[in-house]
Image (cartoon, rainbow, N blue to C red):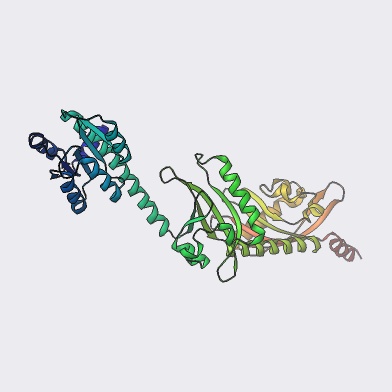
Length: 400
């Protein structure tokens, strides 16, 4: 839709105060203005205009300069003490320098020269209506943002240009124990554990160096000290918010204490598993068959190097290289044993031979327990040992 049409429609929702002492001009202009706006207020001099303004609070003021009791400029100057933003349209036939200087000081928005043109008056009103409409949209947008920010489930804060905390939402108070007053004008780095301060400051410097007009989001992991003295691990995401010409950094805090503890436990479990894999006389493994028939070893301990001349990486996504190691006479029986275990979900206990480049034929014993996975795959958790010497002793005993 055309901007002028939008502004004209918006003008029809506003209240205009018209202040004029000349009877003929007043009588001619009132019905015209009444068509342009939702409500028209009138006054015959500056003193009356000031009274109407303070009691009715109009959206736009149209006023003459030369009037009895109080002139339009004096009225405008007193209105500016009360309201710095209400648009004022000045109607005048004078070009005196002293009037011009006073009009500038009173922040008059626009002028209409006498004899007054209705077209010029309408264009001035559209200019005022456009400014008010844009300001209102910005205020509504800011209010929506403020509501979302304040009542977000995620702990959030805003930093001003001096990197001081300007906003602190309810969730942040709950997470860290500090209320809005306690963090006002403090730097967020004041709340960090000492060993994290340099990391945070480096991230802020890098973030700002990219440029505030570049869309970006940066996430870092830090430790913050709650009001009760407890250290908690957090993930801090930074973004830029521009309310008008100003800018703020928005920080979103996520408590990752539980996740970090789980990661620590996982690392310990992994280290334990790796230690077991290095010291046990065999290979620990997970073997998985997918619904499409493909298979792999999601996990194989380092013993796979000594038993199969393979690396864990070689079989991590595809088990083909493992099956090429099988003795040709044992291949079919081994595959059949896997299929039977998959069908019955009974443990896979099987002896088979592999052919190795340097050590020749070796007997192996595999024991593994199958489980059904949500995607339809079947995965075995098992252990393989080299049973060659045991097999030779059994054979020797039979020969004797």
